[in-house]
Image (cartoon, rainbow, N blue to C red; front, side, top):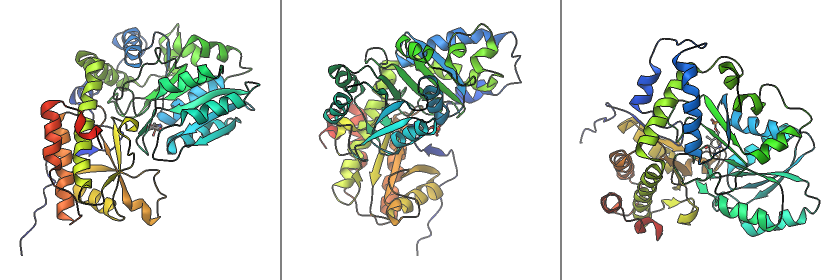
Length: 410
Ligand SMILES: *Cc1c(COP(=O)(O)O)cnc(C)c1O
């Protein structure tokens, strides 16, 4: 009998779709004594930080910053423009769309959901019909998730704006870029997005704890027409503060501010277009590997259409319970943690063990992605899960050549 050794000692790799890998530069920037919050480096950092956040979001407009996670960003954005009795339209392509809609319902909004399932992008024709049917323009906002992190569906936000314009509908276009910002291409101003929400722990590479709401003047005007807005969530003072504490409505998340400064320095040193390109190439390498595995077994993409796939996260199917067995194996044997099939099936349901996700957002490079794929490949072998050959070869070819056709033809 051969003795199997455990190979998990060494640096662990958290390949889940958020929180993502934290760069050493971010960790080091956060490792410091408590800074003064009334004067000095911390308050002085803010104007540059705001400018650099706008550059990542590709907007000339406003940003309000909150201590909170992505759910806080959802509530913050809604609290400024949506009140009891207002109507919102939610084109959902996975669980996060439904969850944002549910948050609007919690504020008393009337929520109309168009459910496009969990494996394909929004059907723009159906959204156009729903908008045209709303002759009185009662729908105040469309809540769209750019990349739904559960299904790994990526939606075409520019096309959504075009459908809204074509219908002549004045609703606000509000977009959740929590998974996609700093990974998938996103152009807030060019695509006509009125409100964009994100958080710091995915493409922005900072530990969870900061949420951001970007908004344009049209959304600012809708905010001004609101009968009341909760003092804490009000974006007005946060986006145009006279004093440092107004950015945060209280004490700043001191160390997170230093972490974000370091992360934005990294993003802008590389260049946002280069960051997008890196995610594009690495996503195609992952898809090439998955296509090869799938050609000889049951592994399959959740999203068949490459254009509708995120460049930050990939949801995959295996026969239940193989996905859970694979995740357990890579984590315990290799120190490689893969993502659970969140939102794809109910926990406790046997189908839940048939989904897993690869996170590839933020601080990732070619050798990390080859390592992650190598870990999955070893797991498929060790567990005797049927799969096609040549996955690592296919991935390394994409990385070597930068040719994106390998996965895109799938
Ligand atoms: C992660 C995520 C959220 C939720 O963020 P939390 O920080 O967990 O509250 C919402 N939407 C999308 C698209 C996400 O990826």
